Image 1 (cartoon, rainbow, N blue to C red):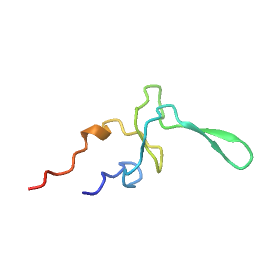
Image 2 (image 1 turned 30 degrees about the vertical axis):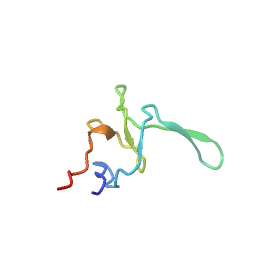
Image 3 (image 1 turned 135 degrees about the vertical axis):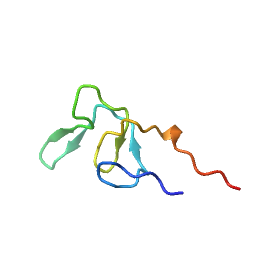
Length: 68
């Protein structure tokens, strides 16, 4: 089974970040804040590729199809 894809960038969600406030990334000269959300009510999950919010996503809700 393939991982679901990000609704923002289309990348497979094989890595999902649990960091609602973002992170600091080094630019070569200084650190810049990289945000996962665009508003005050932040999503708890973000795409590792684009940091797009995954509001309806939770890793425990994704199930592989049952083997028959």
